[in-house]
Length: 375
Ligand SMILES: CSC[C@@H](O)[C@@H](O)C(=O)COP(=O)(O)O
Image (cartoon, rainbow, N blue to C red; front, side, top):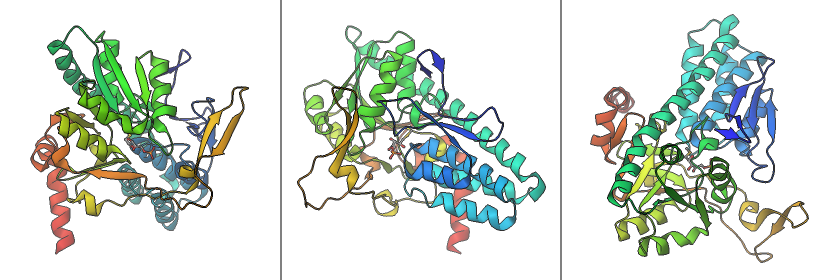
C-alpha cells in the first residue's frame, strides 16, 4: 500500500542483497521509521518486541530470520537452532510455526553450501505468496461488502474491526482490511469503526493510520463501544483477522475479539474472520483449551505512549501505583459465534466441513499426520 505516495511493503531485502528491511511498527503512528535486520538475533528481537507483528508478517519475518541465520552458520545443527530460537519468539500465531517448518523442510534437502541462497529464495516466495493470498482474500471479502451495499444503497456500509489485521500485519493488503480497501477503491461507500485495542492500541495506532493514509472513512472507538454500536444498528459487518484457526473453526485473535463476537451474535450482526490458509492449525480442534495464549509484560497495561502538544513522544503510567495487572494478548472465539471465514479460496462456514471443503489437500495431509502421531 502507499505511504505518502510511495508504494511500500512491510518487509523487503535491502539493496545490499542480504539485509532485511522492515517498518518499525513500534514507532507508528508518531513516526514512520524503517529498520535493517542483519542477524538471526535481530530478526528474533524484531518479532518479540513487535517491531513486526501480525500473524502473516511474523511468519515471513521468521523465514527471513532463517535466511540471516544461514549466513552465520549453514550447518545442520544451526538450522535446528535457528528454527527453535525463532519459534520461541511468540506462541499464539501459528503462521510462525508454518513459515519455519517450510524453511526447515527446504533446508533439510539442500546441501549446506547452497542453504543461504535457498533460504532467501524460499522466504521471498512466502512473502510473494502472502501478497497474492491477501489480494485474493480482498476479492472474496469485497463480495460480502458489495452485497450489504446493494441491500441498503443509500448509506455507507458500516464495518467494525479489532486490532490490526491490515497491510502492516501482512506483507501487503492485510487480511480483514483487504476487502475494505478493495470495496473503497471500487467506489462502494464504507465506514470503519476501529477498536482502539488496548493494551498496545494496534487499532488506534496502526489501523487508523493505515485507513487514514488510504483515505478510508473511519472512526476510532474505545474498546468497549462495539456492543452499543451493534445494539443501535450502527454496524453492518464485523470483520477481524486471526492468529490461529483450529480445524473445527475456533478463532484466536487479539484480546477482546471474543467479546465483540458475543455482542455481534446477540445483535444478529454478521461476524466474519479473514484468514490465509497458513493460519489454520489443522492439528488442533479445541481452540479454547488448545491454543497457547501469549501473556506479555505488565508495562503494556500500566503505561501508554502518546505525543504531547509540543510534539514529544512520552510514555506515561495510567494505573494506580502498586496495583497488580494481568496482560493476556489473545482470546479464543468459539466457532459457533463466527458467521464465516473469508479465505484466499473463497468464503466458507466456520467448521471442519467448511474449511476441509475449501482446503481438502491440507485437511487430508493433516489427518494422515494426526493418525501417525496417535499411532
Ligand atoms: C492479519 S493479522 C491477524 C492477527 O494477527 C491480528 O488481528 C492480531 O491479533 C495481531 O496481534 P499482534 O499482537 O499485534 O501481533
